[in-house]
Image (cartoon, rainbow, N blue to C red; front, side, top):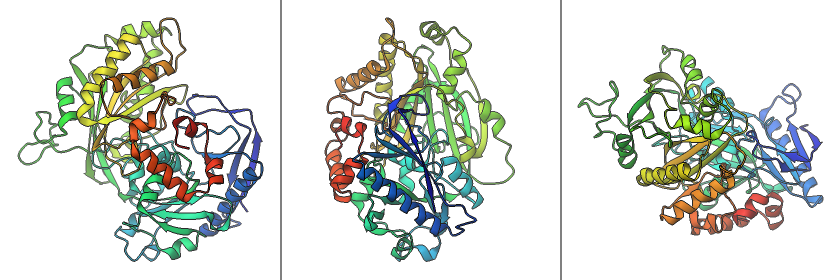
Length: 519
């Protein structure tokens, strides 16, 4: 039988020390051992019953319940003042076979896998690689759990791929303590798995497009995500280039996404007519404190997999451009611990001219996060055609009302179908500022004040925007979610009410949901 340890606590914190937040009780559930219970389906069903037991225990106590994985989000979205569940030990995986598929399935069954909620992106990537497969995209690193990724909309930078939730085929949710409270949810318009397969996992099958796309980015409030069915693809390589180009050209590409007719080309990455190929990934690094007319861009191109490529890790481990937080911290170590002093140096340079080239699998290029100390990250989603204007506005704010100990990057992601997925624009430009946490002084505003000012500046200039659910922001800003999502916010609430009982809605809610008005 699956077993749960309970720990009495006073507080809980995120990986990057964005709390602490109050907490009474922490659950940690481990599956029964493989030697005792060798059948994966039996172990999966057994631990589902244990989660239902914990939900019933919480219900009887009149308290609330939230699940979390790697504590990667930089706000209180995962926290609950009453009871929380750590999912990291729940990491079963199962390949899907043709016999498991729905009669109308259009997916290649060899690309379908069921992963339990606690699997990290790193674990998933290793499992897929053993089967000659790869994720379609991931975030900048690999420590998040799959359930956490989709709950907050972790996005990567796939121009034609989308965010992590966009390759999810189905969701296995535990929405209460009763027998029929284990459900499998997938779109009616694109069924993947058979009722028979899910009945073996004690699940009630629901096929509903509106419900599925609402639950897809569910902020942890559509119940306990037990399993996630994903569509992988055959393993591939990414050829990564880091180049120094003019800001004018970098933003022209951001505005048009027309790589074919751009003067920016990389030898070997063109068609027969010498026109630029469309990359898999495009990212711009901006040092807002520098008046350098150039900037650094990271561009990646998808390549067929072959065995004989150089080991990418020597370059990836040393690359300054792999993690902006890490970059900022490494530079800060070389200067006095004074933000104004550091910013003065930033005005001269922070991003050296480079000409890196690396080839590797997705799981190698987007590797372990090197920095896991106190950090902040603010991320806004805007239409890619507004990228330059927004960067100008936020850069000006950061210089004139700051300084703020971080630097900007821009990534570009295909539109999501998730009802409140923050990559909602046709191509979303994700403008993010990452850095180290700081304390308010007479000369430096607080993170809360900075977050509020960014929202105010975008609203004042009539820029439609969204905010990454897992990042720092002034989430108490009046009518923020309605402003970002309009009618979709109400649709999301309606779908949650359709699936989850009133009592369980309250149990799976938390302060974050109340603050943003989605309860």
